Image (cartoon, rainbow, N blue to C red):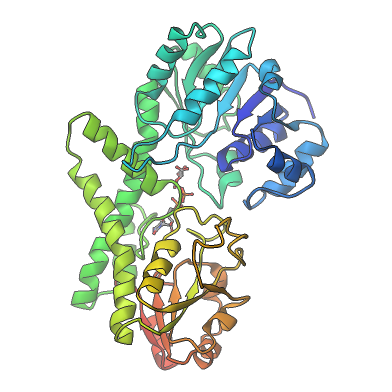
Length: 437
Ligand code: UGA
């Protein structure tokens, strides 16, 4: 493999950082993945991945073996890279505002340890205006000659991150000059993929507005689902009919317990804060958030109404991950829903195909006190008063529902992801409650 220039990745062990580092290495760039977590670096060097992402482990091993992907805890090792991707987290503060402190400190650290200028390319999701503020921050500290800021938001989805890297929907680069933006876009631009070279603020806002639009689309269909239940319609059919209009398209129209995970809700809240700071109202986006929060309460109320209360009831929960094909439970709806069940006096047994224990989900032991972890959906269902589906794992769609019914003490399935056919379950004598059906 032809060896290209070196690139640096700060936050190289996170979801975005590791995918970026491994894929760029596969393209022939020497990828220097810098992370402060030395224990995790040792783990990865011994073959233990920090998280699961389809196709990533093979790619990491291959590119480590051929020497193109290297991990380091020394920022000085980034000196040989002309382009450095910043992939650190921007977690939500209690106010909803995105905490960009890790991005600032990463860039300052990189700049302080350089003798020449690097392009620091921000992949982390940051509020509009951040790149401009960082450029001023570098100027004030006399570091502008060592770091030039570029915005290059990431649009990949967990569970298909590697695939999304190879075939992105678009490449957006925000930079003060076209020449700089072209340099960044030139690192990897597959043929036929639209490229948008623009300003810092446009690029930053495209990322937030994209996630807010996806979130709003889900809340929209979830609101229509409410009416479906009242008028005897089936949201799955309604959704299909809506999505057949090419102006709408069928994606992100699956009704259920709403969007969760580390991105959509956080970015929606961050965008709402940006409106507040600009002293403008965002009525539509506020409603999208409210509808989503309401969804998790609704599913618990449904269960409560069916069982005539939750105290002393035994509930089997299928699905901890925030969506299928990931072992990520960060901000998964499953956590607040299980907590609601526990505080209403129910006992809970959970199953997830990829998360077999609190440790496997990177949860603290006392995050879900008293919850039992089952080795299979059948073991979870054994003797329970209801089965609650929270993640649409393909294996749950394939379950032998007759067997599941025989396991349950009460033949009740409350499905937060609408994965079964109502008619088939009714024939089996199962009381089936979906969302909007
Ligand atoms: C999201 C965006 O889709 C990515 O484009 C973006 O890059 C990423 O956030 C990010 O900002 O890093 P992700 O959070 O991985 O990706 O997951 P999604 O596929 O967007 O799903 C988010 C949630 O919405 C999941 O809980 C999923 O179950 C739910 N969802 C999705 C629905 O409830 N209905 C749908 O129709 C689609």
